[in-house]
Length: 236
Image (cartoon, rainbow, N blue to C red; front, side, top):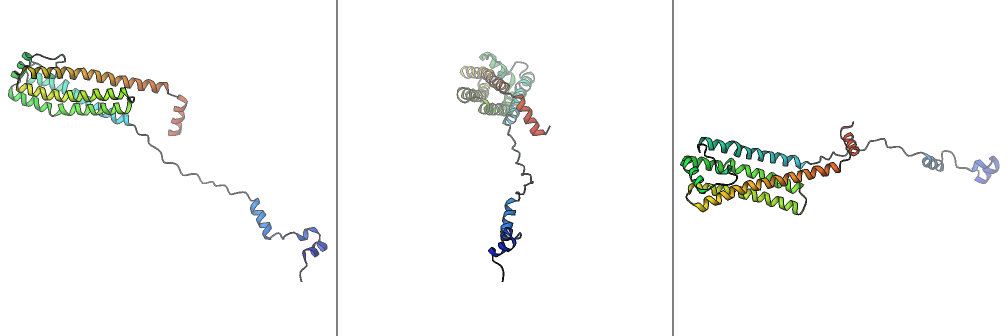
């Protein structure tokens, strides 16, 4: 028969009444005293967020449009003037316009075959160039122009340029077929001159927005933050 706790204390002393070393109380205290296991696993790397750069796409579109416009007005039209119009000149390059006598001479010089070739330029590369250029300009205004007057004025000028350009091509083509129509010739002359004016205005607006954005970036530029960002990206 086993001894009671009181008998054990009386016979062996106070420590005899404690719970045995392997008892449940001992295990609980050991578990509580044991330090938590340190998690040495590295967290999974977060996926890298690629910052979109719409400016690259806009720049590409605008450059393509500018090259097409250059091709039409600096290469195609002067060549047409030299080869078909016998150096008479073409309406598209008359910045200040032309009168009816000048236009009638142009229509007689190119003849029917030249008129067909002239029309193919208008509705081929001459149609694609302003469409691409206006698309690039419109995207530029939407992304970089300030909301409100600056953006809407830029978009309005862009749309006007495109409309005047395309309508001007159509009216000039009709005037070639009816060179004796003074009202039609005058209207085509006004459209051609307006096209050049709108082009200058649009370029001025574009450069104004571009330089404003560059000035804002220079004012907000933090070299320390830029260096830290470079180190974070490239690890140097």
